[in-house]
Image (cartoon, rainbow, N blue to C red; front, side, top):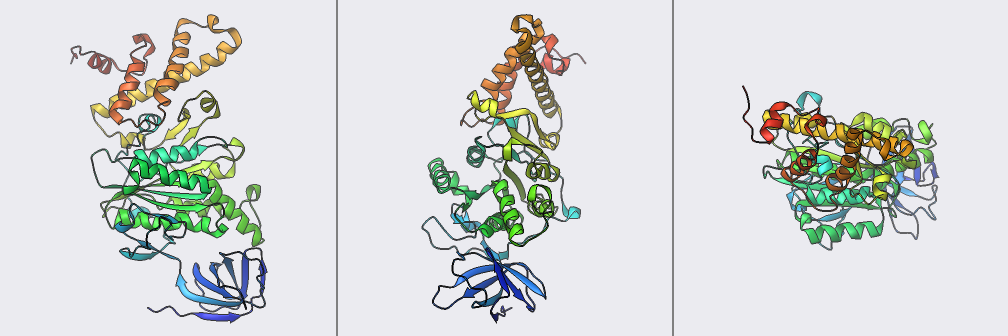
Length: 461
């Protein structure tokens, strides 16, 4: 159906990047807008609040010299949409889908609205298949599962974006299924944009990836559009093309700051720490687009990167993100200061769907015992580290000294893998090597059957 445009001469007012229209007819949320003034180039805009009495337009260009009364505002009748298709694999775009890789705009296989909806719970299938990221602290201890939402909680100065790059490069479907990665950078710098592009081109991972890179210098509204454009492409690849798709979004904090900035310009009553009261709903509308549909072959998995302001995990952004998602991967400054890369703290980290991802049967049971044993001894080692600071290492008992040594080796050899990719088999082997340094009496989470099988002994029925 042909879009019908309507032109209004003179706006009711302007506030920062917002323009207000009165008494608009048949306006749609997300509708594209063209703003013209005498002797000035046209500006783009988008409807972010639709109403019969008052409509709010977010201006996507510089607002210097913009006069509300002199403006000619055209509602184009076209809602925000994105070109999607397998043709986009290997390409890089801005947050609104404009190519930045020097190639022409893609034709694609369809053009779809970016304002998608969360998956209907009735049509969801339970996530149950593993995604291999190549990072031991995730694959072994906090397994990522297809259809899951597993955020990374980073902090100022921590390598959250570098971890995102490592996941994009190393993520695989372990059984060789068709797999794609979509990365959306939200409010990242020009240097980070260039670094990301160069690194993916060198590694070859860009051939199965689509990049949407919104830079800090871009208009605020584009930070809200970028993840939705990326998710529109991800949904097509997953639920139409049948691929297993991993979406990495960095940084959700920049997204929430954009929500607060626009809410302030609209003079909304704010919630916690000045963020809009609807931020939970808005984040849920993004995260709940992940999942698996019962009658479709693909899957859509999300890893949002969240930089916690002031390194505060109780801040509204990580707090609300944690409510919506199924676990978290936590980065820690102390590990980074000691040169442990990636600095993943496995103790507060959690994947609520890990048991589903490691499957059923003897192999999965051994994986669960393996992970529980590593957790148990590492936790005891951290407690011994605190105690040693008070009484000295000589004051510790033999088991605590072994746990203290284990904790140091675990961080250095298991967590601190650097940028090297590990398969799940390599991850398990490194973990078992550490466990084998301990006497049997310290291994309270390993069953006798597993212990005997590890040493090739006869298993008594």
